[in-house]
Image (cartoon, rainbow, N blue to C red):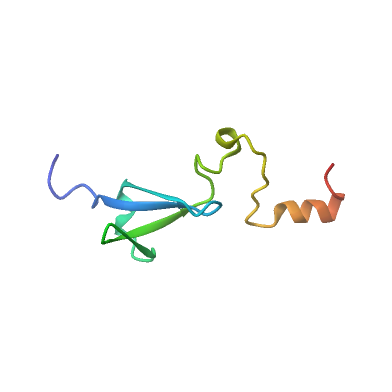
Length: 84
């Protein structure tokens, strides 16, 4: 690889906001300064919150759930009534 043309690459934890579980992987998101940190194995690692991962996705869990972080389901129910 050529030096000086690639972004910084390092460990980042992705946290599922539905379950609270996280996994650590390598990413270029390490450069973001506004991310909170968690301690994993004595090392501070930036955390990126993910709405859905394989631990909360209905396809992988077999459970149907409504995940609405922006209030769209409530707006629909107020306008058209409660869903069946």
